Image 1 (tube, rainbow, N blue to C red):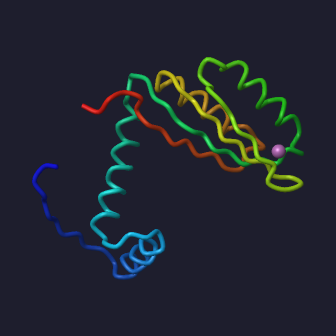
Image 2 (cartoon, helix red, strand yellow; image 1 turned 135 degrees about the horizontal axis):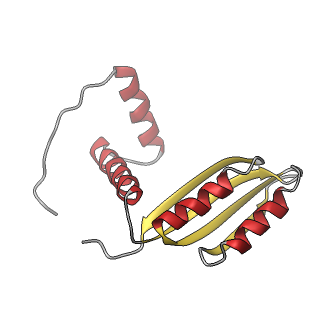
Length: 138
Ligand code: NI
């Protein structure tokens, strides 16, 4: 680890109180570690936006399987992009709701394109892509 730097941050007391409660629930014992983790997440997200190389990621979606043709549309998308989709996991949450976790890998632009195509399906209520750069850190 390099040398440690300290910095001050100004914010509304209420925001800080909510943050402290949230990180406490997550098990953080000090604010610095929580802020470091947030900054790392922010940097990963920011780096991959312009990344030209290979990335891996998981796309988690929620959808109502009664919505018209959603299963067919999802199946067709996943077959069309079989070279980008490594695997998928389907969980029937209740009578209506399904959760699917799709593992993607490939060029960053392609992964983003496939994830957006899935998320933009009408029946998909929630879509969240979590990515990592699939190369050694430099
Ligand atoms: Ni299901």
